[in-house]
Image (cartoon, rainbow, N blue to C red):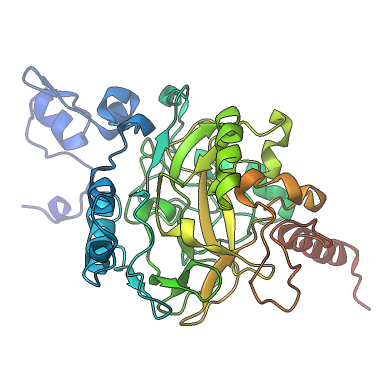
Length: 406
């Protein structure tokens, strides 16, 4: 045996004659074994029948548990043990889509009410209302990346989609940083989806779809009803949760709003972000009254620490984003999580009064912020955070372009 036998390339074939089949196997170019075809990920991804995009309809919502509990006398409903039932329902109803989320504890040191009202089905999902059809999933485009997507890639379709909405901020890359934290509040985020070939675990562009990581509890407040509080520190940009519920058309929202106004509270949230202005008036609304999760308890604040952000995962229709809540600053242990009911438009702050529709019913505001406006509806008098960030980055860019060393 000569020394050359040990110096051959790893890609070279053995010198002894091989069958055509053996050569195909070694070069990984074969497409079938005997009469059975070899299925590659690329071929699998091209057939949408391989993806089970489940659709949930509001007409299928279950009310058995809270109907059963509400049928009992008040003494039963006020039993301290009902808190464990409520917490257990949260865990059971989210075990499929958010199994690793920290436990949510219900706390009340104000009065003897053990839980929030038994009036809604706890869920992290979006339930389509009457007259709303599922999106055409043949329009959903996935990237062809391997492993984790590169924020400097020139071929990743998800990155190119993200750059359509983030390039105005002169900021390359995805909507999240390497820690999975939101980079620019208010800007649409396009996560990798079920049609992408990147690795689900490694890809840094998969945050909301991996569920809630922060620890929160639902706690009774002295004058704002139930609220949401941080059980542990939450870093700026951290994903808090989805504003889930029924996905409705605007005309149904108007009808429900008239009913909710009479009770003085509502959970309607318009999908009316700045990048949807070309489509005209509000078309869709999320209602968390009959179905929702802990985010329905987030109270209003004139100095909020959370913000609603449009997020797209398995959704090809730009008009139908998920409503994801992110922390806009560091949140301390025991601090209440709040967002501003008045609006979330980073480009048009003067339109804040219409952004959340009937979410705000002109109730008195009890947020306690130094700059509290006193009510839940009022026009913004300053620039939004995203617009300020855009101006700041533009000034830096301009300075670097014009700066001449002495």
